[in-house]
Length: 496
Image 1 (cartoon, rainbow, N blue to C red):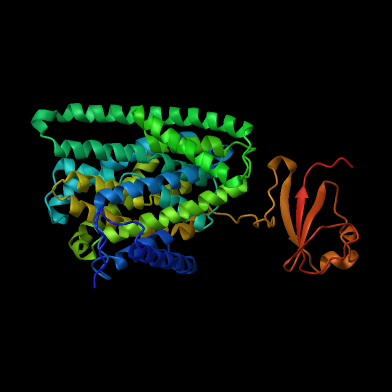
Image 2 (cartoon, rainbow, N blue to C red):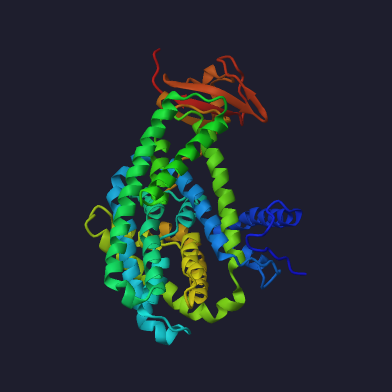
């Protein structure tokens, strides 16, 4: 018997719907284990799991594109906000210009190259007729790299890249949605209205003016609310650490709403607000706040990708497989590299290897699929076929690019090993106090004597905690150590 999810009229607290969601989320959490073992991006597995649960396979019917667009937009706000909180100004400052060019001119060039290519091959490769405007609309939908995919893949694979590539790629993916989204809206409106009554040239020029306005206003509101948030956090003391996380999130949504009222881009305002707040050195309970947002981000990714997978109909995608493969490969191997190399041409400090890797990190994901819902909601002819092509291109990108980022980085000699993760046993230490390190006691350490004092630690180095099995011990000089003890060490200035 088919399980049906009725649009809008569904009871969100019904036992049947909660049971279905619990099963899907439980299964999604389990497949992350498979992904980490075999190097498959978790987001790809979430999409595939949603497709399996959908109407064509297990019979779960969900076809409310407007509701999916709203839920997806909300999920993207959480993902972007978390990314902004975790992004360091110190790391991104040297690559601000590169990231800004890639997220604006790079997106525009990718859309231009891809749109022309789609128009040239549309008669031969695409089984449905597409106008020139439709070709550029399809390119605009896929013009940006997806922030959820880039953040998830780079961080889950723990890629540590040379030449400051990590911050640049995360900045690009976190700020390039406005250009692609606004061009999608403009081209959708252009195809909806009558060209004679509308004036295509006027609409296009107005559209580019709107893009500029949205970016400027969105960034301005984000900086303003972010500075105000830093001031508030420096003077406010709350009773519980979760309240700080909720307060910070409310500031992000405030920036989003104000930017929208002022004709700015809300997502950009929210991202910039998170950047400003996240780079305040003395945020109370920073570790707990970031853990809270990381948990929220995983939940939003699960919900969004499962939902988009449920929208997909494999039976309707098969006729679009060949055009999706042709267009997807062109974007991966031609339009993305061409736009990256042109945008990064003035930056001679970046090596050719770095530019090649940047070209390869053109990951598609939930963003393009969500943008593809706009023509569907607007009721454009052929919008369902466009959605199916975008979905397939996203799968191709996650398979081809998402699964090979680590090997490509190693092949280009751009990755390096990370310092071992420091075991702090839940303690939060302000950075200004010094650097934290952990150390496991070996037989060699105990040759001079069995006690902590016998280690002969130099000035400025102190042992703060000793973990022995499941026990936590307060250290003192005469404490006898055992092989395998874990020491938390702080390295800083000493007055003795």
